[in-house]
Length: 210
Image (tube, rainbow, N blue to C red; front, side, top):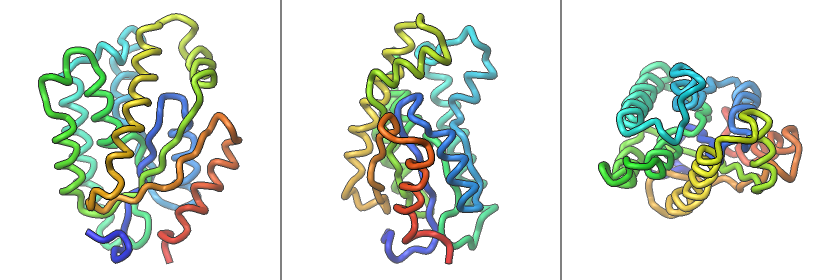
């Protein structure tokens, strides 16, 4: 599938917890006048209640997310048929969900998440533009503590390790021939939200709707 030859794209925002995916994704979707689809895993955990930790969610949770994300892809295919340019902005998506599943204790050995990710990418109906958001460790720790408090060390280290794995997963997508374009990464600990948003819009200009 050729990115250059296609007229429809999904923008995927991936990055460690606290890197600004939700805020920047919402801003980007508004600027492009397209839907924003938030991270399914975070929403599901919030429904389970504050006592549940992401690190302990388990393999059934990952399987549920995998199926739900596939359903959301199918809805996008049906509801936005014929859209030119960027079709939607999605937070985390299958790339991030796979990283969480691989890192989650007790689940990575039971399913080949890397293989399933490769299959999902190969079967996706439109090319994807992947925007990586980075944050340094001191900023991650500060943002984590602001929202969750200073405790929950296992949860903190789990989330950081997911971010580290994401870097490797995304790097492996380059040149895969699956209709994937990696946009220049952005370190959100070194710039304002407005600067980061402007940089993403500038990178997306070649794919914006005519």
